[in-house]
Structures are given as C-alpha cells and as structure tokens.
Amino acid sequence: MLFYGAALVLLGIFHNLMWWHVGYWARLTEAELTEEKRRAFTLTWIVGPVLYGACLGLAFITLEFPWSDLPFSQSSTCCPRLGF
Image (cartoon, rainbow, N blue to C red; front, side, top):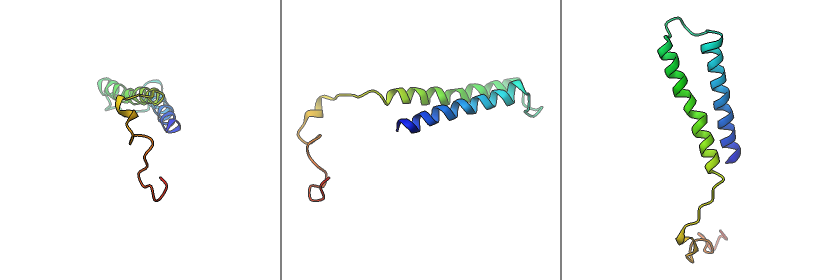
C-alpha cells in the first residue's frame, strides 16, 4: 500500500512538472488556451499530488478503537475449519 501511495505521489508530481513545462515554460499548448484556462488546469491538477501525499501520510497512523478488545475482533477466525 505504501509503494502504491508513493507511486501516485511521484507520478502526480511528474505530471505537474510536465504540465508546467508544456504550459508555461515552453508554451507548447494551443493558441486558443487562454491564461485563465491554463491557470484553471494548473490549480486542478496540483490537488492530486497534495491529496495523495496526505493519504500516504495517513497510512502511517494506527488507530485504536475502544471496541478493538472485544473477543471477536482479533482472536476469532472467519472460517475456523479452513484455518483463517
């Protein structure tokens, strides 16, 4: 799960770097793309890596619930005859 989350963060960053290169530095977009639309795309796509990074950080948090010590929560098995 951590590898998948880290891959999404890195791919999102890479996608945004490519967009900034194409949209701002090299100006390789169509002439019909206005500055407002270009900025809207940038603000929309920047959210991805930020949210992926936040979710990746949440993956390191372990929550303890008051009902986690109930007898069926950890010791019981779903299918005792099959062993799991």
